[in-house]
Length: 552
Image 1: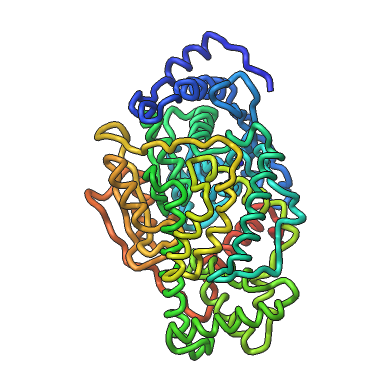
Image 2 (image 1 turned 90 degrees about the horizontal axis):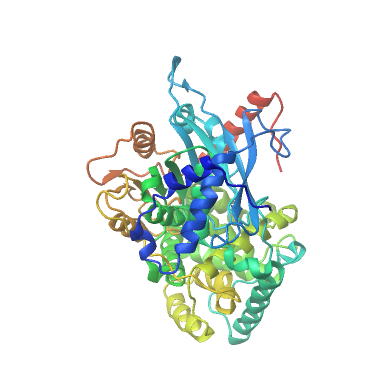
């Protein structure tokens, strides 16, 4: 997830020029005049100071074209002269080289800022995506910019517990938990909320989506951009939508990939209920796919038989964890990841198949927690929790959670209760809550924007993309029909990528909502798209640095 700057006449002129946020955005969230004024002050200072880009920390295996720097932002935008924190920023300058015609020089269009979502995800590695074929045309025209949002990574990192105790493995994952189990998880959620409050103190309240949107405007100014070009994925679409509502005149182009439902009444409790229901459908997609490849995996010739194979594995792991650290909770986590990305299906199915045949090694390799990554995982979870808990009111009575999720688990048992435990600290949160902004722009307020969505995305259910399109006047939705991978920009679907490039490079959108056929279904043999892309990136890094890329 400092000292005050000295004002100059030039800074005052910048302040006047940047005060372009319309009253409509602020009017829908009473009490933000001080924060809006603080954002203008911070952005003016950032424009005057710029970013002192230089070598990146731990840059031995990174190409010299990747530069890093920091941008100071107010911890509390209502008090821009108070404490400031620094956001880590990375950049690769536009290559100006057309990958289709090396003799043609491509004019620079400015900086393109990317956020990968979360909350709690670190985007500082994004500029390296310009080395990959799917991003080279965009990288020719734009400086690719990534950053770690407040609380994340090196950006004033947030922590709620000792990372050494973060991974609890092996772990259970009951689909219909007992009263005693629920009481234990309530106790743990209360302790986690107390840990966040104790470790962060008064700063905790300032880790929220509205501040992430304000930080984005300061970053825009620090990059010297009058208007922002932004690609947000997953959660990045939500605070991107907040940005579009608060600062529509500062937007050049915005891409919302895997859009979160921004309706205020769905932030965040009801969005999580929707997500749990959607993951049941994706779990069914996987089981049907595995059944079609029963000759390879022997998990069953119907989705129901695949479910029974999974249940047998759960029972065995509950009795004797694989490798001492993979229990039902780790198994469920592995297949939850497969619910996000269908090219993880082959590896997950193979690991389950091997385990049931007596070989636990593939399952342990994929599902066991990596202890060396505990600090990073704990940090990401702390930011996720803080942002979602701070953004809106949550039910404070566990009986409400119990009622809603017991009902949901009858029809959607796969993810429902694990989603509850991930978010339950919000019931006992110590910091004041925000009131969600009514995301909405009228005709002509905002330049046309592009929304990308997979029709069967479970992490960001498709209704969210439809809702965002209704709320942002002039937005256009491109749907990957019949697909469910979470985040589709720069993936294997050439139809989706053509719309993305046309918009980012030419500002061109389809005249009406558009559709793309689904990507090819993963096969049981050969590398997945993620594996192929990782190999491409490793090769590109080797060529750029002369050294093999480091691997974990």
